[in-house]
Amino acid sequence: DGVDGLIHRSFISWSGLKDPSEVAKIGNKIKAKITKVDREKGRLFLSLKDLSEDPWKKGISFKKGDSVKGKVSRITSKGIFFELPGDVAGYLPSDKIPAEAKFRLKHLYELVVDGIDKSSRRVILKWVKEE
Image 1: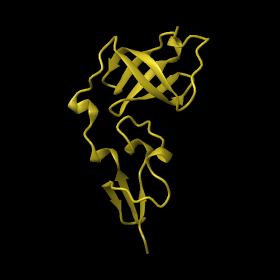
Image 2: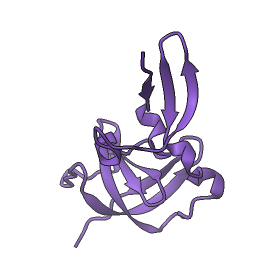
Image 3: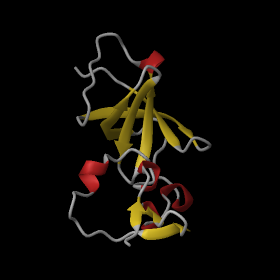
Image 4: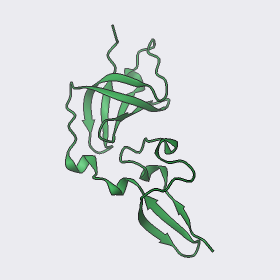
């Protein structure tokens, strides 16, 4: 008669982009906050991100024109998502990606901040061709 604990991907980090396999492995002991209890199903809903301060509430340090390094975490038809420093999500829209640019998952790239989208909690990025 045990209890199952679940950490949804969106509760791993504030950016929502961290790969679960990079955060914990089977058998690891982790510290998490209980956010909900489902007694009927014997489940605990947990959060890792709630153990740290929300970067958007404390104020992000990115400004338009800043150079920033980001790790590719997801590639979609609409754009590329990057993990930026400070657990912030970065987004490079597909219409700003030159045809010759090749991005690979989990690789670091140098980008430029093109804007801040507070409602989506994202830093909008643009790619500057490397010389």
